[in-house]
Image 1 (cartoon, rainbow, N blue to C red):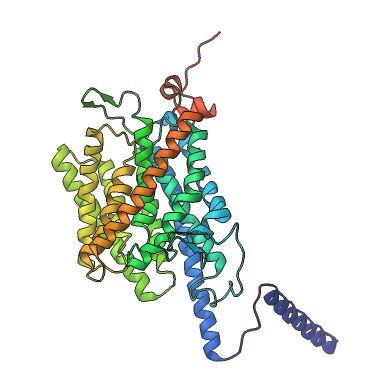
Image 2 (cartoon, rainbow, N blue to C red; image 1 turned 90 degrees about the vertical axis):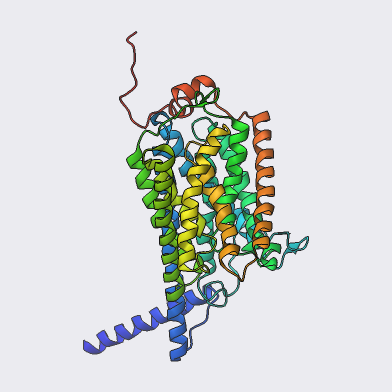
Length: 447
Protein backbone atom coordinates (compact mmCIF):
# COMPACT_ATOMS: atom_id res chain seq x y z
CA UNK A 1 0.00 0.00 0.00
CA UNK A 2 2.83 2.34 0.93
CA UNK A 3 4.71 1.49 -2.28
CA UNK A 4 1.64 2.34 -4.34
CA UNK A 5 1.28 5.62 -2.46
CA UNK A 6 4.94 6.50 -3.07
CA UNK A 7 4.66 5.57 -6.74
CA UNK A 8 1.55 7.76 -7.01
CA UNK A 9 3.36 10.69 -5.43
CA UNK A 10 6.34 10.32 -7.76
CA UNK A 11 4.05 10.00 -10.76
CA UNK A 12 2.22 13.18 -9.75
CA UNK A 13 5.53 15.02 -9.36
CA UNK A 14 6.75 13.84 -12.76
CA UNK A 15 3.48 14.89 -14.42
CA UNK A 16 3.61 18.26 -12.68
CA UNK A 17 7.20 18.73 -13.82
CA UNK A 18 6.36 17.86 -17.41
CA UNK A 19 3.40 20.24 -17.26
CA UNK A 20 5.65 23.03 -15.99
CA UNK A 21 8.16 22.44 -18.78
CA UNK A 22 5.32 22.39 -21.30
CA UNK A 23 3.91 25.66 -20.01
CA UNK A 24 7.36 27.25 -20.06
CA UNK A 25 7.85 26.11 -23.66
CA UNK A 26 4.49 27.56 -24.65
CA UNK A 27 5.65 30.97 -23.41
CA UNK A 28 8.96 30.78 -25.22
CA UNK A 29 11.01 29.97 -22.10
CA UNK A 30 13.39 27.14 -21.34
CA UNK A 31 13.92 25.35 -18.08
CA UNK A 32 16.13 27.57 -15.89
CA UNK A 33 19.71 26.64 -15.09
CA UNK A 34 20.31 25.56 -11.52
CA UNK A 35 23.21 27.81 -10.48
CA UNK A 36 22.83 30.09 -7.47
CA UNK A 37 23.46 33.14 -9.67
CA UNK A 38 20.65 32.12 -12.00
CA UNK A 39 18.29 31.53 -9.10
CA UNK A 40 19.19 34.91 -7.59
CA UNK A 41 18.75 36.58 -10.97
CA UNK A 42 15.30 35.06 -11.48
CA UNK A 43 14.31 36.05 -7.95
CA UNK A 44 15.41 39.65 -8.54
CA UNK A 45 13.56 39.75 -11.84
CA UNK A 46 10.41 38.54 -10.06
CA UNK A 47 10.81 41.19 -7.35
CA UNK A 48 11.26 43.92 -9.97
CA UNK A 49 8.27 42.72 -11.95
CA UNK A 50 6.05 42.47 -8.86
CA UNK A 51 6.93 46.05 -7.88
CA UNK A 52 6.06 47.21 -11.40
CA UNK A 53 2.68 45.48 -11.14
CA UNK A 54 2.03 47.06 -7.72
CA UNK A 55 2.92 50.44 -9.22
CA UNK A 56 0.44 49.69 -12.01
CA UNK A 57 -2.30 49.10 -9.43
CA UNK A 58 -1.44 52.42 -7.77
CA UNK A 59 -1.61 54.31 -11.06
CA UNK A 60 -4.92 52.62 -11.82
CA UNK A 61 -6.42 53.87 -8.54
CA UNK A 62 -5.52 57.41 -9.61
CA UNK A 63 -8.44 57.25 -12.04
CA UNK A 64 -10.78 56.91 -9.07
CA UNK A 65 -8.99 59.91 -7.59
CA UNK A 66 -9.56 61.96 -10.73
CA UNK A 67 -13.22 60.89 -10.82
CA UNK A 68 -13.93 61.85 -7.21
CA UNK A 69 -11.94 65.09 -7.38
CA UNK A 70 -13.68 66.22 -10.55
CA UNK A 71 -17.09 65.24 -9.22
CA UNK A 72 -16.54 67.02 -5.91
CA UNK A 73 -15.38 70.27 -7.54
CA UNK A 74 -18.40 70.50 -9.86
CA UNK A 75 -22.14 70.68 -9.30
CA UNK A 76 -24.31 67.78 -8.17
CA UNK A 77 -26.42 67.93 -11.33
CA UNK A 78 -23.43 66.82 -13.44
CA UNK A 79 -22.06 64.03 -11.24
CA UNK A 80 -23.29 61.06 -13.30
CA UNK A 81 -21.86 62.61 -16.45
CA UNK A 82 -18.45 63.12 -14.87
CA UNK A 83 -18.30 59.63 -13.39
CA UNK A 84 -19.42 58.16 -16.71
CA UNK A 85 -16.66 59.99 -18.60
CA UNK A 86 -13.98 58.94 -16.14
CA UNK A 87 -15.07 55.32 -16.34
CA UNK A 88 -15.06 55.33 -20.14
CA UNK A 89 -11.69 57.08 -20.32
CA UNK A 90 -9.94 54.15 -18.68
CA UNK A 91 -11.52 51.70 -21.10
CA UNK A 92 -10.85 53.87 -24.15
CA UNK A 93 -7.29 54.57 -23.04
CA UNK A 94 -6.30 50.94 -22.50
CA UNK A 95 -8.02 49.60 -25.63
CA UNK A 96 -6.60 52.24 -27.97
CA UNK A 97 -3.19 51.88 -26.38
CA UNK A 98 -3.32 48.14 -27.03
CA UNK A 99 -4.46 48.63 -30.62
CA UNK A 100 -2.14 51.45 -31.70
CA UNK A 101 -0.65 53.53 -28.91
CA UNK A 102 1.90 51.13 -27.42
CA UNK A 103 3.59 50.44 -30.75
CA UNK A 104 3.37 54.10 -31.74
CA UNK A 105 5.02 55.17 -28.48
CA UNK A 106 7.67 52.43 -28.56
CA UNK A 107 8.23 51.69 -32.25
CA UNK A 108 11.52 49.83 -31.80
CA UNK A 109 13.47 50.05 -35.05
CA UNK A 110 10.52 51.31 -37.10
CA UNK A 111 11.47 55.01 -37.07
CA UNK A 112 10.84 57.51 -39.88
CA UNK A 113 11.73 61.17 -40.42
CA UNK A 114 14.73 61.28 -38.11
CA UNK A 115 13.05 59.59 -35.15
CA UNK A 116 10.08 61.92 -35.30
CA UNK A 117 7.55 59.21 -36.15
CA UNK A 118 7.61 55.46 -35.80
CA UNK A 119 5.14 52.58 -35.64
CA UNK A 120 5.76 48.99 -34.65
CA UNK A 121 2.47 47.57 -35.97
CA UNK A 122 -1.14 47.02 -34.96
CA UNK A 123 -1.96 45.32 -31.68
CA UNK A 124 0.08 43.52 -29.03
CA UNK A 125 2.48 40.73 -29.90
CA UNK A 126 4.68 38.97 -27.36
CA UNK A 127 8.29 39.18 -28.60
CA UNK A 128 10.77 36.36 -28.18
CA UNK A 129 11.97 36.37 -24.58
CA UNK A 130 9.21 38.81 -23.65
CA UNK A 131 8.50 37.07 -20.35
CA UNK A 132 12.01 37.23 -19.01
CA UNK A 133 15.01 39.47 -18.51
CA UNK A 134 15.87 39.20 -22.19
CA UNK A 135 13.08 41.74 -22.76
CA UNK A 136 13.94 43.98 -19.80
CA UNK A 137 15.75 43.46 -16.52
CA UNK A 138 12.81 44.87 -14.58
CA UNK A 139 9.61 43.55 -16.12
CA UNK A 140 7.89 41.42 -18.73
CA UNK A 141 6.37 42.64 -21.98
CA UNK A 142 2.87 42.37 -20.51
CA UNK A 143 3.82 44.36 -17.41
CA UNK A 144 5.38 47.00 -19.63
CA UNK A 145 2.16 47.37 -21.59
CA UNK A 146 -0.25 47.49 -18.66
CA UNK A 147 1.90 49.96 -16.71
CA UNK A 148 2.19 52.30 -19.69
CA UNK A 149 -1.49 51.80 -20.54
CA UNK A 150 -2.50 53.22 -17.16
CA UNK A 151 -0.57 56.39 -18.02
CA UNK A 152 -2.24 56.72 -21.42
CA UNK A 153 -5.72 57.27 -20.03
CA UNK A 154 -4.51 59.99 -17.67
CA UNK A 155 -4.05 62.56 -20.43
CA UNK A 156 -7.72 62.36 -21.42
CA UNK A 157 -8.80 62.49 -17.77
CA UNK A 158 -7.08 65.87 -17.44
CA UNK A 159 -9.13 67.21 -20.36
CA UNK A 160 -12.34 65.91 -18.80
CA UNK A 161 -12.06 68.17 -15.77
CA UNK A 162 -11.37 71.33 -17.76
CA UNK A 163 -14.36 70.93 -20.10
CA UNK A 164 -16.75 69.61 -17.45
CA UNK A 165 -20.41 70.67 -17.13
CA UNK A 166 -20.98 71.76 -20.75
CA UNK A 167 -19.48 69.35 -23.28
CA UNK A 168 -21.50 66.72 -25.17
CA UNK A 169 -20.72 63.22 -24.04
CA UNK A 170 -20.36 61.65 -27.50
CA UNK A 171 -18.16 64.50 -28.70
CA UNK A 172 -15.87 64.20 -25.69
CA UNK A 173 -15.52 60.43 -26.08
CA UNK A 174 -14.63 60.75 -29.77
CA UNK A 175 -12.03 63.39 -28.97
CA UNK A 176 -10.57 61.24 -26.17
CA UNK A 177 -10.29 58.21 -28.42
CA UNK A 178 -8.45 60.10 -31.17
CA UNK A 179 -6.19 62.04 -28.83
CA UNK A 180 -5.14 59.07 -26.71
CA UNK A 181 -4.76 56.82 -29.74
CA UNK A 182 -2.50 59.11 -31.76
CA UNK A 183 -1.27 62.33 -30.11
CA UNK A 184 -0.34 61.11 -26.62
CA UNK A 185 1.82 58.19 -27.85
CA UNK A 186 3.37 60.22 -30.67
CA UNK A 187 4.64 62.90 -28.29
CA UNK A 188 5.72 60.26 -25.78
CA UNK A 189 7.72 58.46 -28.46
CA UNK A 190 9.95 61.51 -28.88
CA UNK A 191 11.34 60.97 -25.40
CA UNK A 192 10.37 57.70 -23.74
CA UNK A 193 10.37 55.80 -27.04
CA UNK A 194 13.90 56.88 -27.90
CA UNK A 195 12.95 59.60 -30.41
CA UNK A 196 14.54 62.91 -31.29
CA UNK A 197 14.03 64.54 -27.87
CA UNK A 198 15.72 61.62 -26.15
CA UNK A 199 18.65 62.03 -28.55
CA UNK A 200 18.95 65.69 -27.52
CA UNK A 201 19.11 64.78 -23.82
CA UNK A 202 15.60 65.87 -22.85
CA UNK A 203 14.63 64.51 -19.43
CA UNK A 204 11.07 63.85 -18.28
CA UNK A 205 11.25 61.10 -15.69
CA UNK A 206 7.55 60.28 -15.20
CA UNK A 207 5.63 62.70 -17.37
CA UNK A 208 5.43 66.37 -16.36
CA UNK A 209 5.40 66.97 -20.12
CA UNK A 210 4.62 63.61 -21.70
CA UNK A 211 1.51 63.05 -19.56
CA UNK A 212 0.46 66.18 -17.68
CA UNK A 213 1.13 68.99 -20.11
CA UNK A 214 0.05 66.77 -23.02
CA UNK A 215 -3.32 66.63 -21.29
CA UNK A 216 -3.08 70.28 -20.26
CA UNK A 217 -2.55 71.60 -23.79
CA UNK A 218 -5.59 69.66 -25.00
CA UNK A 219 -7.58 71.00 -22.05
CA UNK A 220 -6.63 74.55 -23.02
CA UNK A 221 -7.82 73.96 -26.58
CA UNK A 222 -11.10 72.53 -25.34
CA UNK A 223 -11.74 75.43 -22.96
CA UNK A 224 -11.08 77.95 -25.75
CA UNK A 225 -13.39 76.28 -28.28
CA UNK A 226 -16.16 75.48 -25.79
CA UNK A 227 -16.37 78.79 -23.98
CA UNK A 228 -17.29 79.30 -20.30
CA UNK A 229 -20.22 77.82 -18.41
CA UNK A 230 -23.43 79.85 -18.30
CA UNK A 231 -23.26 82.55 -15.64
CA UNK A 232 -19.55 82.16 -14.93
CA UNK A 233 -18.56 85.57 -16.24
CA UNK A 234 -20.82 88.62 -16.19
CA UNK A 235 -18.97 91.49 -17.78
CA UNK A 236 -15.67 91.71 -15.95
CA UNK A 237 -17.08 89.99 -12.87
CA UNK A 238 -16.12 86.40 -12.10
CA UNK A 239 -19.01 84.51 -10.51
CA UNK A 240 -17.79 81.61 -8.35
CA UNK A 241 -19.48 78.29 -9.16
CA UNK A 242 -18.81 76.18 -6.11
CA UNK A 243 -18.23 72.47 -6.13
CA UNK A 244 -20.97 70.48 -4.42
CA UNK A 245 -18.88 68.04 -2.35
CA UNK A 246 -15.50 69.12 -0.98
CA UNK A 247 -15.08 65.98 1.16
CA UNK A 248 -15.27 63.97 -2.08
CA UNK A 249 -12.72 66.31 -3.67
CA UNK A 250 -10.37 65.83 -0.70
CA UNK A 251 -10.69 62.05 -0.97
CA UNK A 252 -9.81 62.37 -4.64
CA UNK A 253 -6.62 64.30 -3.91
CA UNK A 254 -5.46 61.79 -1.31
CA UNK A 255 -6.16 58.93 -3.73
CA UNK A 256 -4.13 60.75 -6.37
CA UNK A 257 -1.29 61.34 -3.92
CA UNK A 258 -1.30 57.64 -3.05
CA UNK A 259 -1.33 56.72 -6.72
CA UNK A 260 1.59 59.04 -7.41
CA UNK A 261 3.85 56.75 -5.41
CA UNK A 262 3.26 54.23 -8.19
CA UNK A 263 3.28 56.87 -10.91
CA UNK A 264 6.74 58.15 -9.95
CA UNK A 265 8.04 55.16 -8.00
CA UNK A 266 7.12 52.78 -10.80
CA UNK A 267 8.89 54.99 -13.34
CA UNK A 268 12.21 53.81 -11.89
CA UNK A 269 11.25 50.69 -13.90
CA UNK A 270 12.68 48.35 -11.29
CA UNK A 271 12.53 47.68 -7.56
CA UNK A 272 15.96 49.21 -7.00
CA UNK A 273 15.78 50.04 -3.29
CA UNK A 274 17.83 53.22 -3.38
CA UNK A 275 16.28 54.70 -6.51
CA UNK A 276 12.66 53.95 -5.62
CA UNK A 277 12.94 55.19 -2.04
CA UNK A 278 14.66 58.38 -3.17
CA UNK A 279 11.94 59.10 -5.74
CA UNK A 280 9.25 58.55 -3.11
CA UNK A 281 10.97 61.06 -0.80
CA UNK A 282 11.35 63.79 -3.44
CA UNK A 283 7.75 63.20 -4.53
CA UNK A 284 6.43 63.54 -0.98
CA UNK A 285 8.52 66.62 -0.17
CA UNK A 286 7.30 68.39 -3.30
CA UNK A 287 3.66 67.59 -2.53
CA UNK A 288 3.99 68.88 1.03
CA UNK A 289 5.76 72.03 -0.14
CA UNK A 290 3.01 72.60 -2.71
CA UNK A 291 0.35 72.37 0.00
CA UNK A 292 2.06 74.85 2.32
CA UNK A 293 2.96 77.31 -0.46
CA UNK A 294 -0.55 77.28 -1.93
CA UNK A 295 -2.02 77.85 1.52
CA UNK A 296 0.19 80.88 2.17
CA UNK A 297 -0.44 82.29 -1.31
CA UNK A 298 -4.21 81.83 -1.34
CA UNK A 299 -4.56 83.09 2.24
CA UNK A 300 -2.53 86.19 1.35
CA UNK A 301 -4.35 86.92 -1.91
CA UNK A 302 -7.91 85.88 -1.03
CA UNK A 303 -7.69 86.75 2.69
CA UNK A 304 -9.16 83.35 3.56
CA UNK A 305 -7.60 79.87 3.53
CA UNK A 306 -9.14 78.19 0.47
CA UNK A 307 -9.38 74.39 0.67
CA UNK A 308 -9.72 73.97 -3.11
CA UNK A 309 -6.50 75.93 -3.64
CA UNK A 310 -4.67 73.80 -1.10
CA UNK A 311 -5.92 70.57 -2.70
CA UNK A 312 -4.74 71.77 -6.08
CA UNK A 313 -1.50 72.91 -4.43
CA UNK A 314 -0.81 69.31 -3.46
CA UNK A 315 -1.37 68.16 -7.04
CA UNK A 316 0.70 71.08 -8.35
CA UNK A 317 3.67 69.95 -6.28
CA UNK A 318 3.25 66.38 -7.52
CA UNK A 319 3.02 67.42 -11.17
CA UNK A 320 6.02 69.73 -10.77
CA UNK A 321 8.33 67.08 -9.33
CA UNK A 322 7.28 64.36 -11.78
CA UNK A 323 9.84 65.36 -14.44
CA UNK A 324 12.86 65.36 -12.15
CA UNK A 325 12.02 63.22 -9.13
CA UNK A 326 14.95 60.92 -9.87
CA UNK A 327 17.66 63.53 -10.42
CA UNK A 328 17.02 66.70 -8.37
CA UNK A 329 18.24 67.16 -4.80
CA UNK A 330 15.96 67.05 -1.77
CA UNK A 331 16.25 70.82 -1.33
CA UNK A 332 15.42 71.32 -4.99
CA UNK A 333 12.36 69.09 -4.70
CA UNK A 334 11.02 71.32 -1.92
CA UNK A 335 11.65 74.45 -3.99
CA UNK A 336 10.03 72.90 -7.06
CA UNK A 337 6.95 71.94 -5.06
CA UNK A 338 6.73 75.32 -3.37
CA UNK A 339 7.00 77.25 -6.64
CA UNK A 340 4.32 74.98 -8.12
CA UNK A 341 2.10 75.73 -5.12
CA UNK A 342 2.42 79.47 -5.75
CA UNK A 343 1.99 79.11 -9.50
CA UNK A 344 -1.23 77.11 -9.22
CA UNK A 345 -2.97 79.81 -7.18
CA UNK A 346 -1.78 82.62 -9.45
CA UNK A 347 -2.68 80.65 -12.58
CA UNK A 348 -6.25 79.92 -11.39
CA UNK A 349 -6.82 83.65 -10.85
CA UNK A 350 -5.22 84.61 -14.17
CA UNK A 351 -7.20 82.04 -16.18
CA UNK A 352 -10.38 83.41 -14.62
CA UNK A 353 -9.31 86.94 -15.52
CA UNK A 354 -8.79 85.76 -19.11
CA UNK A 355 -12.29 84.19 -18.97
CA UNK A 356 -10.97 80.69 -19.55
CA UNK A 357 -13.39 78.63 -17.49
CA UNK A 358 -11.76 75.58 -15.93
CA UNK A 359 -14.04 74.07 -13.25
CA UNK A 360 -11.37 71.99 -11.53
CA UNK A 361 -8.16 73.94 -12.16
CA UNK A 362 -6.74 71.38 -14.57
CA UNK A 363 -4.97 74.02 -16.67
CA UNK A 364 -3.26 75.48 -13.63
CA UNK A 365 -2.24 72.12 -12.17
CA UNK A 366 -1.31 70.03 -15.18
CA UNK A 367 -0.34 72.55 -17.86
CA UNK A 368 1.31 75.36 -15.91
CA UNK A 369 2.99 73.14 -13.33
CA UNK A 370 3.85 70.50 -15.93
CA UNK A 371 5.77 73.14 -17.89
CA UNK A 372 7.42 74.44 -14.69
CA UNK A 373 8.45 70.96 -13.56
CA UNK A 374 10.01 70.16 -16.93
CA UNK A 375 12.03 73.39 -17.00
CA UNK A 376 13.00 72.91 -13.35
CA UNK A 377 15.01 69.81 -14.30
CA UNK A 378 17.37 72.05 -16.28
CA UNK A 379 17.40 74.71 -13.57
CA UNK A 380 18.28 72.41 -10.67
CA UNK A 381 20.28 69.64 -12.33
CA UNK A 382 23.46 70.69 -14.14
CA UNK A 383 23.64 67.64 -16.39
CA UNK A 384 20.49 68.74 -18.22
CA UNK A 385 20.08 71.87 -20.31
CA UNK A 386 17.29 74.39 -19.74
CA UNK A 387 17.31 75.09 -23.49
CA UNK A 388 16.78 71.43 -24.31
CA UNK A 389 14.00 71.19 -21.74
CA UNK A 390 12.38 74.30 -23.24
CA UNK A 391 12.60 72.83 -26.74
CA UNK A 392 10.73 69.77 -25.51
CA UNK A 393 8.05 71.87 -23.83
CA UNK A 394 7.50 74.01 -26.95
CA UNK A 395 7.48 71.05 -29.34
CA UNK A 396 4.98 69.09 -27.24
CA UNK A 397 2.83 72.19 -26.75
CA UNK A 398 2.77 73.03 -30.44
CA UNK A 399 1.71 69.56 -31.58
CA UNK A 400 -0.76 68.96 -28.75
CA UNK A 401 -2.48 72.34 -28.76
CA UNK A 402 -2.78 72.60 -32.55
CA UNK A 403 -3.97 69.02 -33.01
CA UNK A 404 -6.49 69.36 -30.15
CA UNK A 405 -7.78 72.65 -31.57
CA UNK A 406 -8.27 71.02 -34.97
CA UNK A 407 -10.11 68.07 -33.42
CA UNK A 408 -12.39 70.23 -31.27
CA UNK A 409 -13.21 72.61 -34.14
CA UNK A 410 -13.93 69.69 -36.48
CA UNK A 411 -16.18 68.00 -33.92
CA UNK A 412 -17.95 71.30 -33.24
CA UNK A 413 -18.63 71.75 -36.95
CA UNK A 414 -19.98 68.23 -37.43
CA UNK A 415 -21.44 66.65 -34.30
CA UNK A 416 -21.58 69.76 -32.18
CA UNK A 417 -19.46 70.23 -29.08
CA UNK A 418 -21.63 71.86 -26.45
CA UNK A 419 -24.92 70.79 -24.93
CA UNK A 420 -27.96 73.03 -25.30
CA UNK A 421 -28.57 75.87 -22.85
CA UNK A 422 -31.56 73.98 -21.42
CA UNK A 423 -29.47 70.84 -20.83
CA UNK A 424 -26.71 72.84 -19.18
CA UNK A 425 -29.15 74.55 -16.82
CA UNK A 426 -30.94 71.31 -15.88
CA UNK A 427 -27.69 69.40 -15.64
CA UNK A 428 -25.99 66.87 -17.87
CA UNK A 429 -27.12 64.00 -15.68
CA UNK A 430 -30.72 64.49 -16.81
CA UNK A 431 -29.94 65.81 -20.30
CA UNK A 432 -27.32 63.25 -21.34
CA UNK A 433 -28.12 60.24 -19.13
CA UNK A 434 -31.69 60.55 -17.92
CA UNK A 435 -30.67 59.82 -14.33
CA UNK A 436 -29.45 61.51 -11.16
CA UNK A 437 -26.47 60.85 -8.92
CA UNK A 438 -28.50 61.85 -5.86
CA UNK A 439 -32.07 60.65 -6.27
CA UNK A 440 -35.06 62.14 -4.53
CA UNK A 441 -34.21 65.83 -4.99
CA UNK A 442 -36.10 66.53 -8.20
CA UNK A 443 -39.59 68.03 -7.72
CA UNK A 444 -42.37 66.58 -9.86
CA UNK A 445 -45.72 68.33 -10.23
CA UNK A 446 -48.91 66.26 -10.17
CA UNK A 447 -50.75 65.88 -13.45
